[in-house]
Amino acid sequence: MSAGHSPQASANAAQAETYRLSDAAKKRIDKELGKYPADQRQSAVMASLAICQDEHGWVSPCVIEEVASYIGMAPIAVQEVATFYNMYDTAPVGRFKLGVCTNLPCQLRDGKKAAEFLKMRLGIDFNETTPDGVFTLKELECLGACGDAPVMLVNNKRMCSFMDAQKLDALLAELRAAAKE
Image 1 (tube, rainbow, N blue to C red):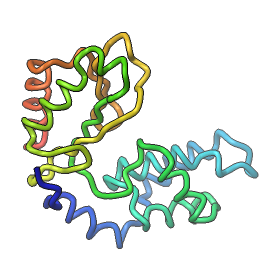
Image 2 (image 1 turned 30 degrees about the horizontal axis):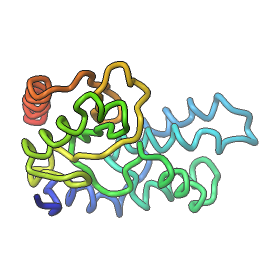
Image 3 (image 1 turned 90 degrees about the vertical axis):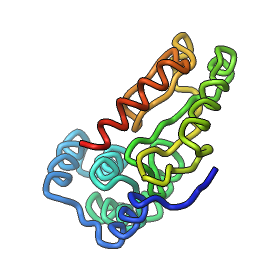
């Protein structure tokens, strides 16, 4: 299994040095900032990072600087948030980040088998990206859906439950088709 950089990851890395908040991102962040008193702007840091990651693909050092400047925080404080939570990617990832729960309830319901199936199908291990830049495979802590185990998240947004080989194949086919659009 190879951890080589994908074309998508390389393109994202090149973009990292030039990232600036778009007007659309500023508008979304302003909406989040409006939820808090003016002296508590830092309360919007998590939402701001998520907005920028959605737009940029990952939370690069330049994204951290932009968010810090925009909401009035020290860059190190924003970096601490970005590196503490696993929903933020501080390195380039593929178009689809597949996060597989590896906690006990999922493991007891064939979660390990589902993870191994994904590794085999994609030809990568956890924390690696496919050479075409389409998929990155991540190991996640409990997703709070133990009754639906084994579970996984696609791009931190879409929960997939009761994952078996058939459902995983269908999901990969769907995502590959979407990547071609």
